[in-house]
Length: 318
Image (tube, rainbow, N blue to C red; front, side, top):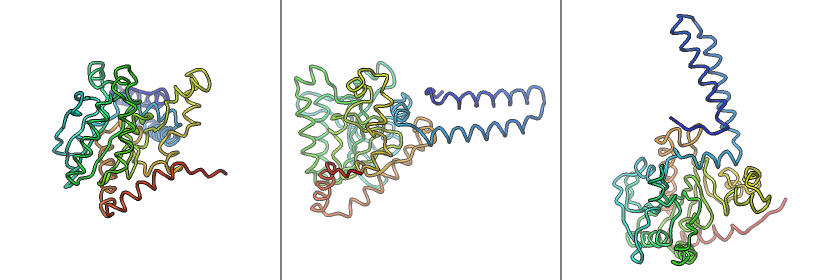
């Protein structure tokens, strides 16, 4: 059963009313087809009105939904022959950053990304999707391996941020992310990054330097969480909805600002309502980007990547 978000409750209430009418019609042998048809139309109109006019904060809630497909869900649904590789060759293996070889159709790729857990036990193993330094060092190791094999790299971003604990600081989390930023800019193969859900701060950027940066329709990408921003500017987390609106962190806003290259559509209500449909749209979008990027020479690929990130600092006032 899909867990409801607060703004989805009117939809659930209408669905319950329709179920009651259907049960009454069946048990009492009464023709309520007209009333049911009218209710179904109202339900359809309400669903479209809600999901086509989502606020940035509502998209953040969808992006964090516990039943939303995670990195390994997309790997199993959109890729084949996934072979996971482990370890950073320095400290150990970070289970919050799985990666390995896979096939996307007929194309061999390297897929790397953040993985969250669905329950307490798995979240502890995956560290709630917040990678340690060894996760980022493993990621760049696998990217260099992909470069040697001359295959595209696909980075799947879904993290509230890199792990901020003392151990991560002792093992130089900031240096690990900064190193990835530099080295990813120099990779001589196509790199595609997709924000699946949460795209939090440097934790997202650590695998986010790419020729194409895409976002799922209800994902968000931000330097700080709406709650963190609200705590700083308004001194209270209750202002998170206003912060989400002001920061322009939702995919449609970021596309208008040319900070991302495309938005991958999700099923009505969000990817958690239909994992297979979300994965199908994801696969089609990523495959199209690989085909386009494969047309560029290495020189052009590196030049366009450099120009892409240089223009992030441009600002045009009204």
